[in-house]
Length: 238
Image (cartoon, rainbow, N blue to C red; front, side):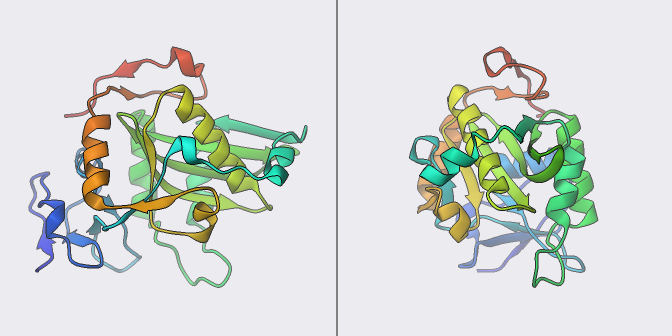
């Protein structure tokens, strides 16, 4: 089955047309309208510097259900440290910049400058959110992703000290449970996420859950400025 080349219009082919690797389409842009349209269909961009813009919808899908989060005893102790401060949406540009840095043993990163700018725009629009972990006042870990309906689409995380990114995810899950979210889309399998309870589900099941979750309005705005119970839904970009 061929990979689709996207037209100028903000449309995507059915996800069932993705090739075995999950690659669905190529081209288009990273405008807020196209990105949000992609996420609503269970599609996400993933490509490297020098490659064309690639869009993916893998089958199966790697997800984390909030109620299935596994927290080890050592992590519970880590989260009690007085030197630890975890916040939301206070340093989105810094978090994505840290995620963009190549990992040890890697030559590059899939977070291109174009991607970085696109998600910062989504953050300004209230759709993309960050979790920041500071130890002794220093940013040591965090994550960012996109929120639509009651699904959080995790994009990337980083850690410069042991357990910092896990602390970010655990805190995020706690916030999402307060807001009655259905799941976190982890997109790509990693042992790190698997140890916390993430698992595969069929793409058909994922898309059914996504469709149901999108019936709920999206909690936009700064997640750090308001208590979870005071977050208010706003109209999505159509």
